[in-house]
Length: 610
Image (cartoon, rainbow, N blue to C red; front, side, top):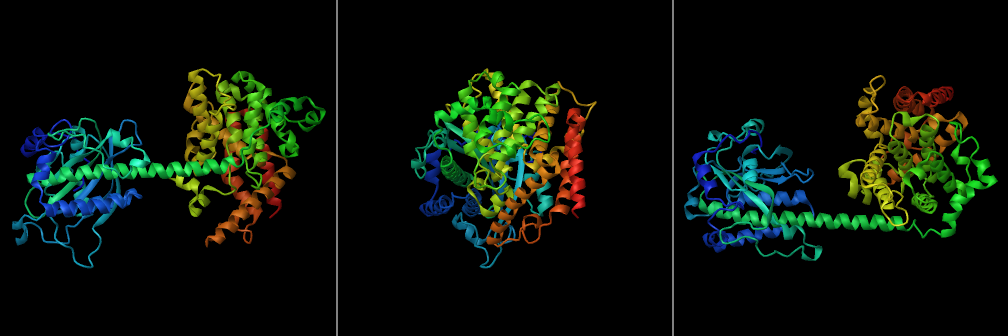
């Protein structure tokens, strides 16, 4: 049935003959005009009707694919059809993916054909009025070197097999798994003009001039997939007319798939624009006087008093007055040598800090600007007092602290799950990649780092600049606790004496662990501070729970103000997340032992609350 298993070990005589008639562009030498001449007006009408349904569905790729395989099944009168698409997620483009296929094998008699076939009809027999949908969904991915689909894609050529089980490239595993019986198959490559791929939204519904010559050769085309027709119903094998139909339909399929991709890009662009405009409402012009004040205030007695004890774990950034917080961040950056390392002037660094502050929403109860400076302070402590640079390079250490500042920028006060529930713009933009909020925070951070006036990495050389951005990306995405659980075994595997400072992978694992512990800063504070922070966390949790109830959902107990119970919930979180993380950190960075001891103390205090 669906091909994608065995390597290309050869071809049958029929394949070889057909392949020999194919051009390098992938279309048979019977030519586009010749193909048109072979098709009856009735069939062309059916083709146009099918294409109208396909083009009407381009808002949804899966719907487009379903319409394509349904039309393919009917137009060539076959039992099954599927579309393999080039996996664009890999630069090498050497994998094919399939999402849907049709199975009409149970809705009609098998070959020999019905008597009506003598009329030359290409339409499939009608299914019973209440028969189940022939559409089947799956998610299959194969290398382009495998199967008949792979051969068709690799050679950019149409291929026909009359007896699949006699072809050495055929893989019967799918037949065995589904109970389907493959006999004959026609595979045709799907091309799209490179000019089409570059069309703007104004050309979305235009059909460009064909980039093929009379021989059917694609002079400027890109392979985007393979269309397969399986088991001819009205004949034992596919003929030249079927070949012409397949070629014509593949052209429209390529246009439809390309238009669907273009439409999705338009939607993505609109969502990005909406999110950007939403964010811009919080990013007013930064006054030059504020920029100068950021660095100047660190000399004032009020500031010096506010940061007394900054190098201790018990220091509470929430006690720093709001007007001094940008200077507080500037001071930390200066103290660890970050500003000197970046070779950046005080004004640019101050402007970046002020822009980061404006990126955090003041109405958010916990994931706000104070949360950002608390996490940054934890990272500062690791670098300043725990000798983190014994284990990381200077650039890695500095990017850990820098990323901490914007790791939650433009947080909405709700978690990733809520983005999906509410079908927010952020979910539409990023949920398919995972770590929805973290990818948004990363996008906003990258925007700041590459914007004129806040481009604090601009003086790094090309290699360092690229590495710095990569490290910031790694750190911000690592703040998703879901990824922490995925990599915890990798972190456990590098506990000394196995940690190797020359091993970049080991260092990246350590950076991820560091930012996780920094994000859990409340557990490495004295009890009074930790308790007040947890109160803020629960206020935000309960606010989300209230929103979930408005959506008709029942929030988890921790987020339900009527059911949450902080002591046992916090003990469970400490046992399963905080303590293991801080223990690993103390093993990898011994000078952080105090943070682990404070976490144990916090647990004891919660235990007393039971």
